[in-house]
Structure formats: C-alpha cells, structure tokens
Length: 550
Image (cartoon, rainbow, N blue to C red; front, side):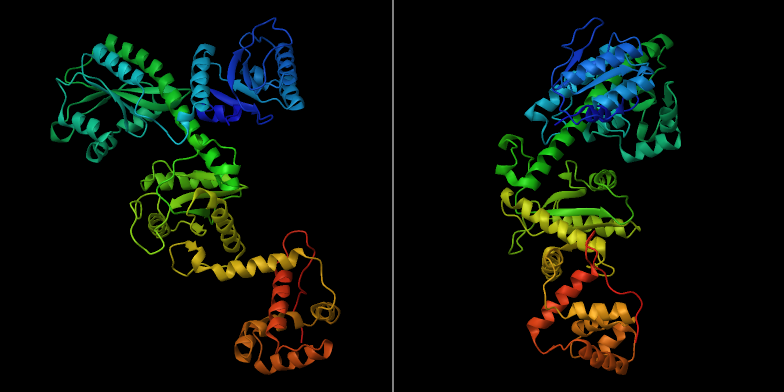
C-alpha cells in the first residue's frame, strides 16, 4: 500500500512535498492532466499531475474533478499549491495535494514516480532493498570515466560504492579496496575528513580536489551529486593528471542525470522497506492466513522460532514514527541491514530469531536479528546513557503464532511504561516473557476485574466510603497487609508507619467491615480488586482516597 504521502516522503521535500494529506488512498498509476480535460480526470488509484494548471481556478477545478473520480491525489507546482483557495479545496474534498518544487521538471517527476510506483506494485519489492545495483548506474560510471579519461566510482553520501567504471589501468590500491569492500576504507575516510573533503561536498555544488592519501592513494576529483539542495552522493575520479575544465563541466552535467537515478534508487529502497513493514504489520495483527497478504508477499523470516519484541525509548515522544527513527539507525549500525521493523497500533515492534527451546545454537543465534544479538545491542547502547528498552513475547514456532507473541510483548511494554513492572536494576533493558510471566497473569486478572461492573457484597466499597468520609487510610493499609501477609514489619515499612499503628488500623478496619483474611481466595479477590482500583485505566472514574489518616 503506497499513498501519495509515501511517495512524497520517499522522493524528499526538495522535490515533492505534501501540502494536504487527504485520504490514504493507494497509488496505482500516474497520469497527466492537461488544460481542457473533462470530468474524467483521474481514476481511482491515480495520482493526477497538474502539468497544464496555470492558476488557482484551474487547480480548484482539477481537485474537484479528482475528488469525484476518487483519485489518489493531485500534484501542482509551487507556489500554486500554497494558494489559500487551493488548500481549502483540497481540505474540503479530502484529496491529497502534493506540491512540486519550482526547479523540478514534470518529465523528471513522471520518470521517478512511475519507477517507484512500478516497484511498489511488484512483489519483488517486498523484503528487498536492492537486488544488486541497477545497470544504468554502471553505464553512467563508464560514461563519466570516458569523459574524465580516468577510472570512476559512484558513491552515496555514506561513502558506499554504488557503481564503478570498467577501466582499471590507472587504478590504485585504494580504488581496488573500495570496490571489493563496497565502501571507502576507514583509514582513507579519516584522511578525507581531515582534509575537509566531505565538509565541502555537503555544502557546495563545486567539484572538490581530494589530496593524495596514504599507501600511494592518488588524488581524486570529486563531483557532488545534488537534488533540491540535498547532497545525494558523489562521482570520484582517480585524477592522476588534472582534469581539464571542459571535462569537469561535462562531469557536472552527468551528475545532474545521476541525481535522478540516485533519487529513484533511494525511493525504491524506501518503498521496499515500507512494503515489508506493511506486510509484517498485517501478519503480526492477523497471522499469515487471515492477513490477506499473499504467501509470496510475506516478509522473509530467518529460521524459527521467533519472538515479537516491543521497542521503545524512555525519552521518545508518543507515536511509532519517532521510535522508528530512533531504532532503525541503531539496529542497522549494529549489522541488521534488513530489519523486520513495523508499527502497529501506535507501538513499534520487531521480529527476531530465538534459540530453540533446549538451548542449542541455531544458525542465527547471536547473529544480527536474533534475540541474543538484541540483548547485546541494548547493553552497549544503554552503557552510553540511552533510554532504549525492549520487551519480548513468548516464542512463536510458526508464523501463525506471531500475533500471540506480539500481544504478549505489548502487555509487557504496557507494564514497563506504567511502572507496574520494574526492569532489573543495571540490566540490559530487555524483559522476556519467561522472566515476567507472573506480572502478565496478574495484569490480565486486574484488567478483567477493572472492566467488569462492580459486584455487590464486596467489603472494599464500605472501606472506601469510610476513607472518603473520615479521611482514613484503610484501603492502603489493607493493600499493604495483603502484600505482606503475616509480616507486620514489612507492611508497616511499606506504609511508613509504626507496626503498632498498623495493628491499630487493622482492628479499626475490622470494625468498619468484618474480614476473614484467613481465606486465601478472599485475600486474592481483595488484592485483585484493589489493584483494579489502584490502576483503573482511563475513564473508569475509580480512584483511591487521597491523604492518609489515622
């Protein structure tokens, strides 16, 4: 499911920005709207590009026609998309309105959008970010090498090699290491950083001369690749001799073409991640058979069993998207290059591989994407003061059991968030169901009691009424005594009172309503009802009395 907002996010605000979100309609195709188009502009699932729209009146009319035909959205050029009348028409019709930046041509936009939409429609997009590098990038590298008459590599903004030219006659050892390792070696990166190469690439459109480096590394002419002010990557030319100015200008022209390819590559990778997250979300909610996701479109899972893990950051804002922005870079930095991450009901989850029940090592145990690996990641990140934490549901031995594991992980997460479950002091921040099953059992019983209507005959109602009327604290006293039954010292310490005061309260409590606390079943029922009143949940109207009294 790819919406107009997804497409805009993938391409970046430097090219396309959502001005009005509209309905989340799936985009299946891209069509052009020319002046004089009739009422048939746009069909369900089409993103309509207002190529010939010249003014607010025409834009409003296009939005109205697109709304009637249930199109997925409309794109018009800036600043027309910011006209108050156009914005109001989009909001009134609940049609997604995208704003095309002035420097972007419609031809380039159509090429980018069609490639991304076609990728999203293909089942090959699921669970893959890239299936090798597109051959057109290697063709562009060969073109750049012919222009410069020198070997060339094309790299992204993270110094990862995307393509390289075929001539190797003047290559140095650094070029060979870069191609084989698919990224610039760390020692050479440090050299370029110290020389200010990356700082210049990030802020300027001008080519940069990277000085000769260690181990006989030759100088490089580096041509930045930018789109909409964003630095996407670079063309690195092995400059044994200075490159003439006219060839540098031709390389800059090649960089503008390369920018479109890098944008499309990035957008397709982003779409693949979104599709994987969407398929995983459906499986975690409904299971494989009931999710409606085709078997060929389900995300690729490592060898089972698996666990669903709730992920959070103690300092993050509400909502799953900020948590994704925190967690995805972390897991990728520690080697999980295709993380099984998705948001569901405002929570962030991942699926990790688990060891088999008897503890034998599996092929994925300890590797990126496994539970033991996640434990190490949390230990390392928390040692640097981060607030990352996680809760793992029980093992799922088949994909059909993943929803159950997800529910258990969410239960543990709610207990951690509410403070009703305290993680082990100095621990790694990961709570596993087997370590806290008793808290889950009590929480389920407490939630059931809280959701049910009050039962007649409970003695707690009389105690609560007495506390409210006389300012006493009989309910907290009873709760402490039930938690420390037979241990007056422990109960008194919890209440921060003297044991004699505790005994006095218990005698007076029995005067208000007789209680036979020798019955284990009665003690259990009283404690569950007290727990329901202590943590009533939103909107229940149940609470405990305020200040303690005698």
